[in-house]
Structure formats: structure tokens, C-alpha cells
Image 1 (cartoon, helix red, strand yellow):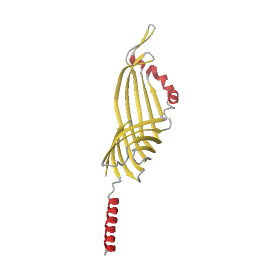
Image 2 (cartoon, one colour):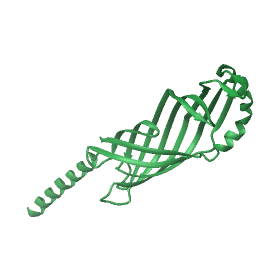
Image 3 (cartoon, helix red, strand yellow):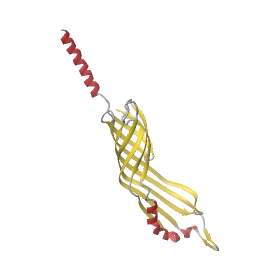
Image 4 (cartoon, one colour):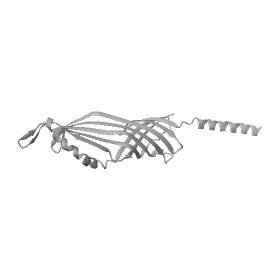
Length: 221
């Protein structure tokens, strides 16, 4: 009789353990904001230390104006447009059981990372007794864009799938990109500036890192 009771208790415990494993929540949805823009994320817990995630980042800034900027003693206006769309495929590794410190690695698909700047003169320019009107000076239009697949590495705090229902996190990292594509056009007296495209491209050659700073809130389900 005792053996039957023990077997019955064992079966109940085994069934409860199996149910607890089945109902363990291993998924999370997160919203983030940071340098890549607004992010929407889905994450899946692989084991106690590894998490996989897919994130879509989007950012758009239109008609950002800065007036009366001084460039080489000339006063100009700047009109800028910035747009980015990035899809991340990543893995998070949490090395310590009692800490949410994490290491992240993955690939960023840069479908659109573009910056456009239009520079115009705000006043006439004088060379001795000669005055050149701002209309005759012309304008400069610079377009800089990154594309392709870029590896990224980062560190932070906050599990992709939190222990509790809600979790917060922060991450610092960078994409490792190739040199950006550059387009440079100019009008009127500034037309020869277009020939400086290669010089501008060489100046931007070191811009092979796109920083990534994010604050996120995750919901486990």
C-alpha cells in the first residue's frame, strides 16, 4: 500500500514538473528607442544563458534646419534629412546567473541609412570691390548613405526575455560597416565643388562604425 502511495505521489510530482516546464514563458516582445530610432523586437529564450532576437529599427528626421552656421568665415544655412531602416538578427549571452549583464552579437541588415544635407549661403560675399550675390553663389547638396550587411557587437543589462513579466534594459554597441557611398552636387559658382566628391569620400572613410545605444522595455509571454 505504501508503495502505491509513493508511486502515486511520484506521478503527481512528475506531472506537475512537466506542466511547469510546458508553461514556461520563453518569448518576449520589446519596444526600444535609441540611436537607430524606434525598435520593435521579438526574442526567444534558448536556454538559461542564450537568447535569440530579431529587431526592426526605424528613424526619420525631415527638414531639420540650422541657420547662420559659420564655415570658413562664411555664413550658411543647413537643411538636413536623415532616414534609417535596419533589421537586426542577434544573439545575447548572459554569463552570470544572478546578473542581467549581457554580451550581444549579430548582423545588421542596413536597408536604408541615409543622410542628406543642403547648404546655401545666407548673405552676399565680397571679394574686395566685387560683390557676389547669394543667388549667384549657388548651393551644395551632399548625400551620404550606408547599405549592406554589418556585424555588430555590444554590451548591456537586461535579458531579452526577462525573468518577470516586464523587464527593462540598456545596450551599448556598434555596427562595423564599410565606407559610405557619397554623392556631391553643386550649382552656379560652387559647381567646381562637385569635383571634391572623392576627397569627401576619403574624409568619411573612417566612418566605418555606426554607434548603437538603446533603452528597451520587454514583455514576456
